[in-house]
Length: 69
Image (cartoon, one colour):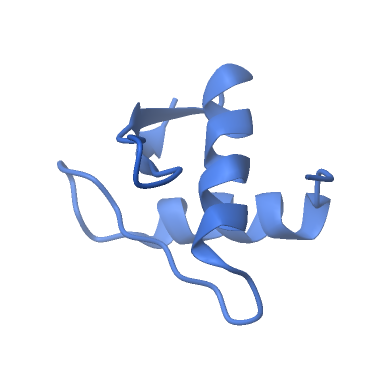
């Protein structure tokens, strides 16, 4: 999957505007599949920009964001 800098920016903005002080944030963005969003959340977590959880299993790829670091 190719890195999409517009999607990364949108994910960061969604995390920033989230009203949840704790817990995992469910992010949906029009025009993007859940797997694309999960992959980019993984990239952001690996870069140390966000806290995230890897909930992936044999059924699919699932990363959830928690907060900005």
